Image (cartoon, rainbow, N blue to C red; front, side):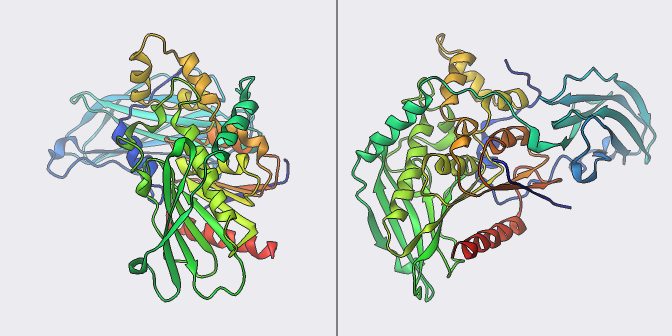
Length: 454
């Protein structure tokens, strides 16, 4: 069951271990459903049948959402598919910024061969927010534990956290945009016949952006348009290479690659494995300053085209691209519709309370002058939560309730500060990837929005 909601109103505790490879995979794989967490884990078939276990966890919250200040029961089912008795310790823990939970006692358990057992625990939900229950089983005869999680929420429209804007926040972005405007865009469109067909003409577009970096993207223009058409600017997940979609003959689609992504890598050295720590010592040098400005330059290009209906310009992205979509809509009033899927770049303080990425710890530890306080201060200039009150266009946000990469708490702290028309969609069982049906649905939402604007 999927939940859709409409609204008219306008340091760091860690449990999660991750690697940089996981970061790149998850951020780039926006269109892929990552189905783990509520699914059973099976050890490889070659493993001794004596130790085969599977663990699942669920809750009685309907579609993953409960009522404020009401209890929710979590049930863990541990199945022993082996041929001997399994003993071990089952433990529960809670990951949340919304409550300060009391410890839950561990249980020493025994499960006979071929049997399964269920274990339950209950907690009371907060007034508003999300709670992730973690269940871990440590077998006595092996060092490898099995762990599963289940997140539930309540009253997400009320999730807020204090802003972290620095005193010069507005001036910083005013000067940054002025610097971008001072760079001649030098738009260049090169037709790519080998990528075109009878319905859609494809161009590779290049342009100069901030610091004279040349960025590029792929423009798809319907051949038989009789009037200016709506346009969608697609922006990438972390390290993702945006390419033509080949799908739309009723709108112009610009699949844009900010610096370091896809066909915009020529002027940027290195690989995209350190974007979020690149230049992080100061806001003026941080990677996301340039990439946010690149997205504004992409709007400059779309706004320069006479075949685009200038009242129907949308920006859409997932993960990092969801953060790009929020930032672009906030910094450029020419954006008429914003779509942010599983958005990254939201609420950095809570982000690092709910997740851990070892490369960020390593980056801070590498230089004695670096601290979490100074790092979070730089990040605050690029936190979409601090930009959200500038978003005046209709906005659609979709999340996976079980997402551990971009936790729902952080997404909603940006979304809830958007003053304009907005709605959100929650996929109760999805993680960091929403699946093909979601993307088909978003295209339909965009067409519906464009039809209303006609």
